[in-house]
Length: 194
Image 1 (cartoon, one colour):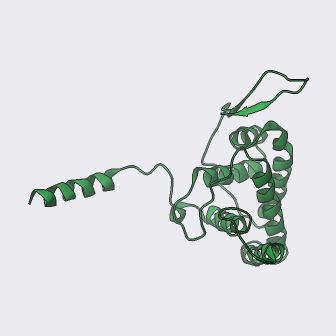
Image 2 (image 1 turned 180 degrees about the horizontal axis):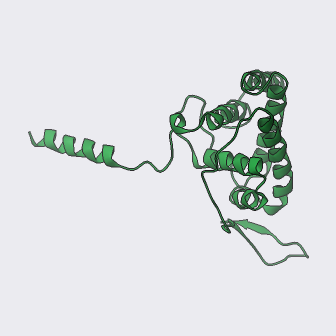
Image 3 (image 1 turned 90 degrees about the vertical axis):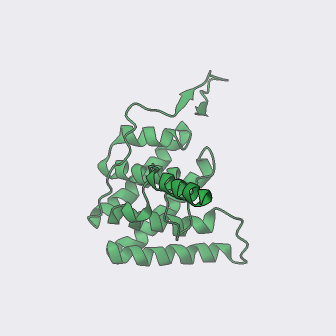
């Protein structure tokens, strides 16, 4: 009898816990579309080591498939362009980020902190909030990477604008830069992650 009561209390405590991150189903339509596209493309570039004889061909096919899917939401021409730009953005992040980005698998219903930052980055790009873009990127990549990542993000945001897909801004990092400048070395200031 005591075990049953203890089990009931544990179950009640688990149900009363507050979730700090939204689930995929709680996101807006625009965010779900983008996040699923991110996850599909990221799966071919990142995560467990992918051994595939024609890896580049597979990556191209996935980008084309994502482009076709985005074409249903945006337009037949804008979908493939958005997928190519998203692939460029993700490749850039994978090359320059402070650490490997935490991107969930396609079927996972939870959202990682990095996925939330990517969604907020796209919302800031769409709103052309350059300070917000810089603040978000400061948590993900060094200062030298801000300009190329911003260009990719703005290009992708422009494509989504044409399809009237609007991303809500859920994270405000006002004046909250995630890196600090270290002492100059040979005339170069080094950015250091948190």
